[in-house]
Length: 635
Image (cartoon, rainbow, N blue to C red; front, side):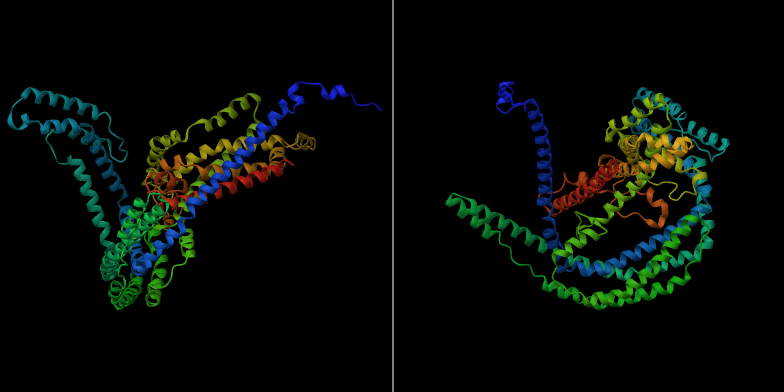
């Protein structure tokens, strides 16, 4: 047995003999980094919870004022009135879509001629205004200046006539006629060119002609709209009353908050004189309890009228329904009409249920804290800074984020995974050296640059393409807004493709080479090996790539803020797939847009932190799931 050498234990550098070594320093460095990361994560969680959880008590108080002041009572009727207005809007849109669809050619010809004239006017307008506003034009003063201006106008006109938009629905002779009229048009002329006026008149005549067979439908819409006017009048009267009560309650709450702040400052004051002054100010800020019982009694006097008007409106709506047309000839008009017919029974049911709600409502019912949670999680409105009532509903923002994610992943998953399979299984080494860096380079493009690209290029091109007659069959075409869900989704797809591609390609690389060799030895083709052996074996890693791509899409801010349109409203699903071409807002976008503008510590401020908590939990859950799947795929 060899005895240990005492000299070997004491050998080495003096720092090693004292417990220090390069290896231990490296280990400590990385361990401290991991600990710092965990510490920062805990700080983020604590900060979000501290700022966000205060939202629910504040929102509960706002809902309590909403009930005590009587706004909730008025909203029982306002909800039905809004539903009635929405059905009226659907009927009007169906009516207009039917007429415009029948005279679609006249509409486009008129629009093209007007667009050509507008483009010309925009380019020569500044020079023309200088001529018309020059004193020499009226007094005959400085003729030399006027001559220079007219020469500039002629030069600008010649340039404008070479930069006119295309007009495919105008004949060559019509386009030339319009251009000649603009070339010979005096600078002082204010009326429309003859061809523009002629096409506008032709479109108006075509509308009138196609409107005559729809006269009965027009009368039905007018009767339906008139049926809700009496209910709208009484709602307006009640609105004025309850708004004044709400303002008095809010003023009292502000004074009470100031009083508590002064008392807290007095408790911390060390100077007795300053303490007495703060206490005196707190007593002066003491608010008198506002009288809401008197206004509430006055409001309840209108209850019989509300009940009567709801019953009358329910009867009228039921009688009008049979007079609606069975169908319309234009596809877009039929969608609107069918949507109105689908909403009709719901409207009647709500109108019939309203008297029970009115009779059972009372302003003395307490508002529990759970009501604030439920209102936030299930609310369909995000309304802030309004004169009526602030509502903080998660659904419209969540729907916008989800729809954009659906568009992005629908594009990014097949592109990213397909590119990964091709590069890993089929591409030659030279192709791999070219394709892989190019795809991964997309991650280096700043998101704000992609946002500019979406606004100035992609959104504009997409809207122009949507006007083509051959694409009218696509739901939502032609697109009204270039900034919409689909545009934002396409740009986010471009941003998430590198993430999905890199991780999916790594997952394919991690599949043992023996799998492919065994498959080829059994006679499988390269394509069969790729899709029946390699992809199934790497499925867990590919799924993790998709989940991480989803996390990237959900957490993105700048692109959706610039390109999604920022309309805080649930998309109109009566458009079918056309809903994806409507503007929307997202969870990330609302925080970036509003956080810098809201008062510090307000309910609105804390609501944005609750949105942040929701995002944090969502993205963390997605990434944790992806990490778990990726870890299992490597075992």
